Image (cartoon, rainbow, N blue to C red; front, side, top):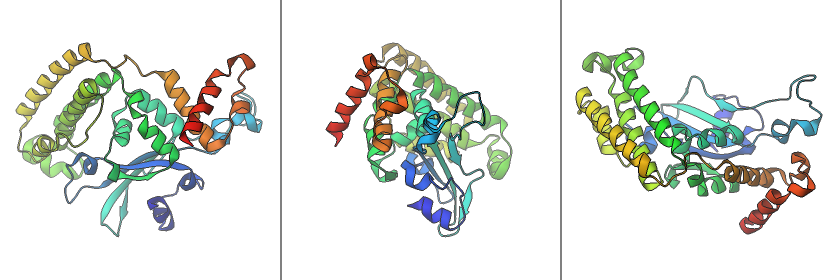
Amino acid sequence: MLLEKWIKNKKIFPPDWLVCNSQYIALTGSRAYGTSTDESDYDYFGFCIPPKIYIFPHLYGFVNGFGPPPPSFNQFATEPPFFDETIKKEIDVKIFSIIKYFDLCAKNNPDCLDTLYVKRENVIHSTEIGNLVRDNRKKFLSQESYYRYSGYALSQLCKAEKDRKGNRKELTDKFGYDPKFLSHAVRLLGNAEMILSEETIELDKYKVLVSAIRNGQIGLDEVKRIVSDKENYLRKLLEQTKLPVKADYDELKKLLLQCLEIQYGNLEKALHIPTDDRKLLLEIKEKLKNIN
């Protein structure tokens, strides 16, 4: 696995349990969107299941509000990205705890949802649990996608005109804006359209248009028109879509518990579920039988 290589080369320093507990890692960013260039870096995104003490600290004697706090883990990230001498490219890695990952996906966070919709060849590591989550990715989609994607797109549009710093200064000086951020805005709105109308995401569907914007072939005024038209269309789609207003958290909780049971084994003791409220665990056990 790439993580092991980077650890061995002292490029990343994650918790010692992260490699064995990683469940799903995908190549995202421009290389998944079909818009990469020779200079593009590599973005890897995924989730892991931390050791049981991180998820169920009460089983190890920790009492909330008394004594030392239990160990916690939300994510591991390379900040800033590191340079890989073998491929001569910068590498950015972000791996979430499954709890945080589910939460972000349920809120239709664009970066997280992207990882579940990359092409299969861009999934560089996936366990039984990773496959299970990917197979159930549609359960995360909801009307919240409109607000998340649209809000993110508009922030990118503003950033395109205001950001004059960093290693892209040559481009911003040439155009008066950063075309990379403009391309992100259009791509995000295109993805929102697919979610609301088709209930899926094809990450490279708009690669020709996005690449043209990123290369400066389509200017700021034209992009603003495209964004305005997309926004109007998305508002109409929002009224027509069959997606739920919010993701079904009960269904996602069942999926999450399935994943944790595959990893940890029986969770009955960990969850302290009363005798008259064991229906959820029974449903999970039946699903696990079907998987196995």
